[in-house]
Image 1 (cartoon, helix red, strand yellow):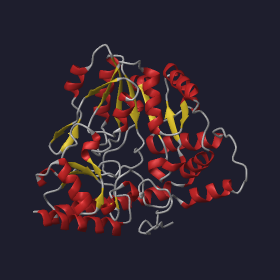
Image 2 (spheres, helix red, strand yellow):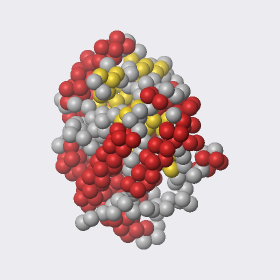
Image 3 (tube, helix red, strand yellow):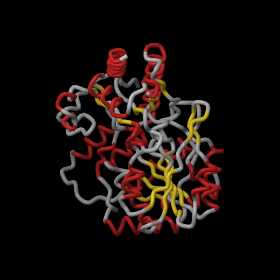
Length: 391
């Protein structure tokens, strides 16, 4: 069945965070929003139909996760990631970001140290600092045009107060899909020092390169024993507003600690429409996803070729996973404030500034390519014009 990803869908007046240009200065409200990670594509029609069918029943009371909810997720992970998950390992969460904070509360105490690998998704740092823990940075390094983990630096920064490492896999914003070798070395270091790994794998279905995604917990028994895996259908099927996530914790001791925090805060009940949407997406949405991946790869190629040929001063890093290319704008010679102004005020493009992602983000911008290609080409043309106007 063909799906029309070229369709232009008006998201204004839908309370969309992505399209709420009221967040911008008045003279920038005509900017094209290519920032926050949600897609400008309709969710699979099977998902829309399932939600409509459930909405036809006029009572929307308290709801538990159904057997179909668990089954669809377990079967999806088996098909897509070759991971045999047991139902009892799964803990519901209203999202990956809440789960990050729950993990911080479950596995650390105030003053404990938590490692992140910047430049990285900014809620990682917020989850550490907002809960009174110490942030330890183990920055990624660029080698031969590709980001890698700095393992020697990691080992030097671990001490007796280090309790947790938050991993982004695939990595947002640098687009890496970690190899089993990289994951195994990370697990060896953490397991040897008693450190729990929280592996944010929300982008794991969006694999655009040749590297295969491996769930961190699957690389070894040792990995399964120390890893908390954060997953959700939200990025895959554009369901973020339905606030549904699945937290997979094979280790019973770690799972019980996490569940206790869920109970303490009162987050245990599911979202009725999120539950229905997830079941329909995992059971019937795979053909839609396969066509989406083709379209996203073509969008990425459009960006890569356009910049190489017409704005070569801006480089784009290899996009192995996610739909969020990482643009290296350091060749423009601009300060971060000037770079922000170039994109937003001159090019009329609303992207995420690289500085949002912490150490290593200066001079970069994150672009969301999950939009119709006509919008993406228009954005690239506006960027080209702005760059050559200032040069």
